[in-house]
Amino acid sequence: MLSSFIPYQVEDCFLVLKTMKAVYFLAAFVLLGLASKLASASDPSPLQDFCIAVNDAKNGVFINGKLCKDPKLATPEDFFFSGLNIPGNTSNQVGSMITPVIVSGLNTLGISLVRIDYAPYVGLNPLHTHPRATEILVVVQGTLYVGFVTSNPDSRLFTKVLYPGDVFVFPLGLIHFQFNIGHTNAVAFAALSSQNPGVVTIASAVFGSDPDINPDVLAKAFQLDKKIVNQLQSRFWSDNDSRN
Image 1 (cartoon, rainbow, N blue to C red):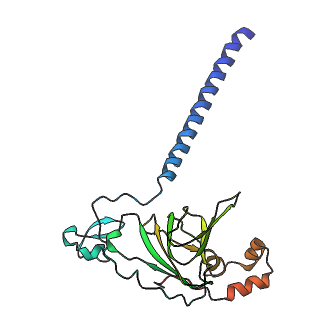
Image 2: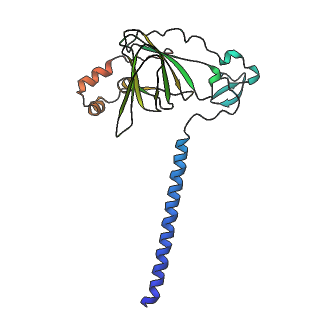
Image 3: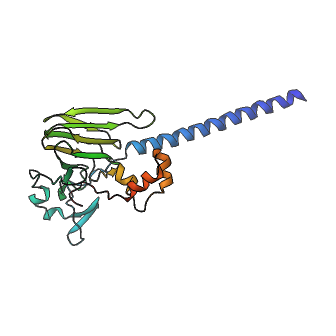
């Protein structure tokens, strides 16, 4: 009786092992698919030589990012921008101004460019992130103290003092900043690896959100007195984007 029962137990064990292997394989396959999907999370490749962004459908023929102008109607002006030689107005709360390059011909090409001006000694491009882009910054005038912080759990701070001709990279999604530590105006240009990199300015996002974040949440998160949180939320939080 016992001898006839054992083969069935062995057969059942093999069946369980095969099932477990199939489950593990399926789980590994799903994770691999997710990883490859995340690894390729960037602006989609263009489907034509260029795609001049237009805001109406009258002359639009393709959809790729924004509505695209008929290539037969493209002109050199669609690929041109003038004005990066003009200083930005740094008379604001943070003492800096960002001037984005608006070129319709950049649509779908996965890159953008800005000029950043910093007031003497107090000019700050405050702590912020670009959720969709890596940034490469080149200093052309002045002296900047720059840095970024890595993700949890290390939260390592990488900083450098930059002079004219120096270049620094801010990895995608990480909190970073630039601060003018010189006694003259500073100017830098930054290229970003996305047509629409996005920006989240930490202080204004946290304390200037609409509607306000519950003060109890911020008091606990930042280990602050609730009265201080209320004071911070009552402030006017401006940005340094010349388009606003």
